[in-house]
Amino acid sequence: MAEVDQKALFEFLLRMGDNTLVLGHRVSEWCGHSPILEEDIALANTALDLIGQTQLWLGLAGEVEGKGRSADDLAFLRDVWDFRNVLLTELPNGDFGRTLLRQFLFDAWASIMLGRLQKSSDPRIAAIAEKASKEVAYHVERSADTVVGLGDGTQESHDRMQAALEYLWPYVGEMFQSDDVDAAMVAAGIAPDPAGLRAEYDALIGAVLDEATLTLPKGDFAHKGGRTGYMHTEHLGHMLCHMQWLQRAYPGCDW
Amino acid sequence: MARPSVEQVWEWLDAVPDPEIPVISLVDLGIIRDVAWDDDTLVVTVTPTYSGCPATSIINLDIDTALRGHGIEKLTLKRQISPAWTTDWLSEKGREKLKGFGIAPPIDGTAADGVLAGRVSRLAHGTNLTIECPRCGSTNTERLSQFGSTPCKASYRCKDCLEPFDYFKCI
Ligand SMILES: [Zn+2]
Image 1 (cartoon, rainbow over the protein chains, first blue to last red):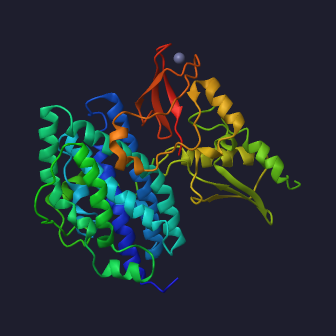
Image 2 (image 1 turned 45 degrees about the vertical axis):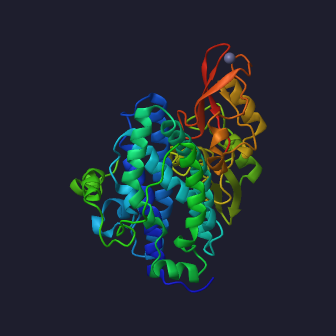
Image 3 (image 1 turned 180 degrees about the horizontal axis):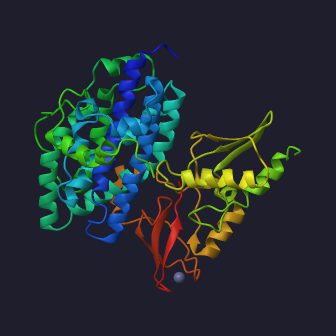
């Protein structure tokens, strides 16, 4: 394995782990509030998988960093500017349809990314990707199915899904932006260039959105700043207030 | 105390119930990947079912408690995530017990592979998977949700005896 800058590797692992952490927490906000029991349980299951994957990614991040920080330390004791998730994952849930569309837009990316990472030159990353892929395969099937059901549903559900797509679309591009961290990962054979996943992604979501009778918005403007930590939306800070409250108020609290 | 054989340890572990589905053992579940002696320390390698499975820490505690109860003093539990756990590893005995408990056992080779998302038109008409009702044996059943009461199960309903049941889904 080529020598890799450990700081860049740490950064890459934070990006993977913060995506699943922030989205997992967002999805868990539905627990007890979904339109029907089966959907409630399905969302809670999805959130649980994402949090489980977070433990693997952030656990490895802490190991690579070498300062003795655990996955929990990284999740609960960092401030908003230290998070490296894409902005898409931190957006508020909105209605049920927007939550599921956000989930689908993320799942589609995750399923492609994890497929590539199974061939990572770092066996620890390949192992996590192998594990997570199996779970994400179920997530993407379900979110795609629901996007089709709601998009090609009633006039009301269709309109809401189209509005959700208009709202979320400008946040899709960030998943495919590359920087120095990505270049270092590519050079070491650890991870693919995100930009190289776009064609496959477009084909996958294109087929599903088409089936869902939804129209892709024009233009490719993309909000960015989440995965680089340059600037998050105002929403992440509010979310962290809820998520981190207990560990902040009672440091080291355990039960 | 004399060092017990690894076969003996496997037997002990086969008596430790899964905390969520207590009719099957941890060995039936296929999550015990290896038992070996490293000098005078017993090393048990365990793989998680789902990465977020909340039972994981309880399972480790149960293994620890059971083996210490049999007099094992030096014990290391090793976590191994690759190869990733698959329901193919469920024992035959475990599958029979699941059925008796009212949970339809997994049908091997039917795990989600994600490619279905690209073939949504077929998806929209549901899965072709035929799951037998563990209660009455009817195959006239329907899926209510791919995600059931725990990450490893899907919810089904029998259209003959009208009872809902869990299907241990393939992964
Ligand atoms: Zn029946």
